[in-house]
Length: 508
Ligand SMILES: Cc1cc2nc3c(=O)[nH]c(=O)nc-3n(C[C@H](O)[C@H](O)[C@H](O)COP(=O)(O)OP(=O)(O)OC[C@H]3O[C@@H](n4cnc5c(N)ncnc54)[C@H](O)[C@@H]3O)c2cc1C
Image (cartoon, rainbow, N blue to C red; front, top):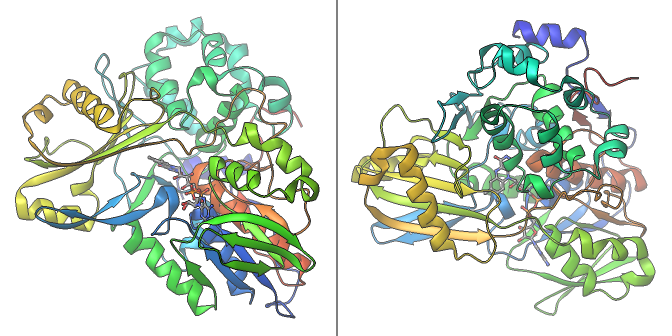
């Protein structure tokens, strides 16, 4: 354990138990059937926990492959098959719940390899390094303030320190009461930071949440600073699978689920939900009906809104859920992912993953041929490289190929050698499925429990009362949905954990 983590522990910066789990029989005492709609992280986390306790669970996934926004699928390239993915993901070390699900398939998490460094690139300023800070606060914050070339002591004097206090004082109620109506942009402006510090330390961070600062709640931004930096004992360093997500995660997790009697039906979209005397009936687009005592809806926000709208029975069964849907189902801005198979490589000292600040489109660069086994083999065979570019919140109505080309050109401004690489193949997508965290949205954000008995929600847009985000929130809400079912049926629940629940300076 690092010294900063020891100091952090003394002031409560450590893993906290949100739900100790346990409490019932190791397996449900009588037959219970559950349907989970959506086979991403949230749905599969719920299904795994349910199946392990003897619940007869079926996962319905509309896509041909599992994983949702962490999905991977085969791609036929002219020089052979390759797997493509929905996009690079950083597996942070405070993702306790997601990691506990992943331990089902690899108890030592050996498939997750540490990524050295987390540089932030800019065309205007020197690179900032996030990955080598001490892991825990307050040492990480002090090191950032002392070491960062983007922030000098004179800048700190000019900064509005009172405005910065809320960042250190995250509280799951007060923060939302005071800051949810304001925008992240207003909060950052109120800090009176020099432009460089704002760009290199703050904006790059907020972009990773798939929302524009001017349209994102300041409270959500404070919550995410707490979750990733100011309340997190594990640090900003992260790990990544060394194989594609299908090989490393979804295939073994499916086998684990099936060994416990669970089933996965891919290519099967839920079309409508109806109440039955025994629970619920989920009708699928192919005309089949799945009856279950409990249902977990673990789909992305627009899909949830569409499914609720197509289920007229919910108006009586779950009026609050129905009322919340139009706002909740409006996703954040589109994001773009472009994977390039290129001739030649970038400089050997370029990092596997880099964040990018203040380019018009480009937000991150990943060198897949230095990360995963299959692209590594492809690059060794061809002398080429496999590069993925992301834009986390981009202009609407721009075709994917155009966004990909804008990102490629912007990359050449940061890494001039990239201009000399010929593109052999490109797979580009633009999607809008990420939850929006608009100002004022917290009060009406749905939680895991709905107002209908035996109907639960899970996903990265679903509210939690403890710090969580992105993949970790999906896994945590999936487990919580399973726990509600297990407790209702008399079986032991699964533990749920998180980081320090409140900021270092949050008043008690
Ligand atoms: C480019 C990109 C990069 C990212 N990087 C990171 C990162 O570095 N770190 C991090 O923590 N997070 C990251 N994320 C976020 C992360 O991917 C999501 O938070 C997480 O995967 C969401 O999982 P989910 O299960 O909640 O939703 P989803 O993955 O959206 O799963 C929902 C599933 O429901 C299915 N579905 C929809 N409608 C129906 C229906 N009617 N019937 C049946 N199935 C249906 C969908 O096909 C999908 O499989 C990134 C996301 C993207 C897009």
